[in-house]
Length: 589
Image (cartoon, rainbow, N blue to C red):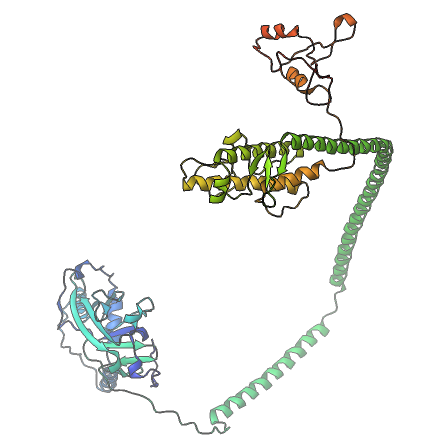
C-alpha cells in the first residue's frame, strides 16, 4: 500500500485494469446512516475481538483532518496571549471522572465500528474474496490479498461488486452497510491517501501501480523535465565539507596529544623485566611439554612399526611354508592329474562311442527312410509317412488321420529317448502314448487355457482342435531343433520333422572308430536287478560260483511266483545273457 505524498503516473491504461491487478482496499469515514439490517447468512460470521478504549481514542484522534488540527493549534496560540480564565466547554461530561469517562466512551462508540467486506464478480453468487474483520475504527486499511487462485474468466473482468458489512461496538448484530458495483476502468488515479477529505463510506482501491478512487479527479504528475545536470555545490554541502575537515584536524591533534602523554608515562616509569621473564618461562614450558608429547607419540609410532614388521616377517615365513607345502602337493598331484585326464578322455571316448551305438540302435529300431516317388525331403518312420508340418486338404487325402497320429507318436518317442542319451533336456516335455501322444508348454505366458497340446488330429474337424494340434506339432519341431543345436547342428527349417531327426541321427552315428559292444547282462539281467533277485546261472555241480542276475535256470521261476510275481516277462522262452545284442534265443545260438 503506497502512502507517498508525491503524485506518480499510473502504469496501467484504463482499459487494461482487471480484477487481477487489485491488491487491497481501504475505507474512510465510516458512517451508519445508510446501513441495513443484516441477513441470516451474515449472522453466522465470526465476532472480532474488541480493542481497548485507548486504541479507539488514538484512532479517532488520527482520523481528524490536518486542517482542523492546524486551526486548533492557531486558536490555542491566541488564547495563550490572553489572560487566564476558566475554560468553557459545550460538552456536558458530568461532574465526576467516571461520568466523564463514560461520556467519552459513548462519543467514541458513536463514530467507530467493526467492518469487513466481500468481493464479488458478475455471474457468480459466491464471493471471490472475504476480508478479515477490522475493529473499532472509523478509517480502515485492509490487508493485501492475492487473487491468483481465481479462475481466468473472473480474474480478467473489469467490473466488480463490493459488499460492506459493519456493526457498532458491543453489538452482535451485523449490518449490511454498502453494496457498490465498480468499473475499474472508470477509477481515477490519486496516488496518495494524505491531504484528502474523503466523503462518508469512501472506498479506496489499491492496484499494482498505485491508489485509485471514484471520489476525486485524476492527479497525474507531469513528466519530469530531463534537463542536463550541472555539477554544482550548495552552501550546505560546502559547510558540511568544512566541518568535516575541521573534525579531522581536531582528531589528528587529539591523537598526537594522547600519544605524547603515553610516551611520557612510559619514560617516567622504569621497565619491569619480571613480567617478560615470566612470560618467557611459561612459553618455554609450553614448548617443552609440546615436544615431550611429540617424543612420546614418536616412540609409540616406532614401537607400532616394529610390531608390524615382526608380524609381517612371521606372516611371510608362514606364507612361504604354506607355499612349499602347496608346491609339494602340486608335484604329487601332477601324476594323479595326468591319470585323471587320461581317464576323462577315455570316458569321453566311451561316452561318444556309446552314444553312437545307441543312436545306431535307435536308427535301426525306428528307421527313417525316404519315400520313393515322392517330393524331396519326404520321409517315413517305420514305414509310416509323416509330412513336414503341413496338414492341408491334399495331405488329408493322401494320409489317413490315424496313420499321421501314429507316425507323430513314433517321432515323439524317438525325440524323448534322444534327450536322455544326448544329455540335453527338452524345453517342451513330450509324453509318447502311441497315436495319442501330447506335449506340454510350460513357458509361454499368453496361454490361458490348458497347456497340453495333442499330437494327433481331433475328431469332428474342430477349428480350435486343429489349431492346438498344429501348435503341438510346432512344439515337437522346437524340441528337435533344441537337440540339434545341443550337438552344434544348424537347422535350416524346423518344419522338417523327420529330415531333421534323420540328420541328427546320421551325425551322431558318424565316426571312424569301432562301435563299442553292449554291456553284458541285457534286458533279463536288468529285470532281475529291478526285482531284487539273486539268480544263479551256472550249474552248482560244476563248482563255479553263481552270477547275479542270470536267468538260465528255469527252476527259479516257481520261486519267483512264490515271492508274489505271477509271471515273468520272458517266461516260456529260453534266453541267454551271453550275447552282444539286446537278447538272443538259445536255439539260435
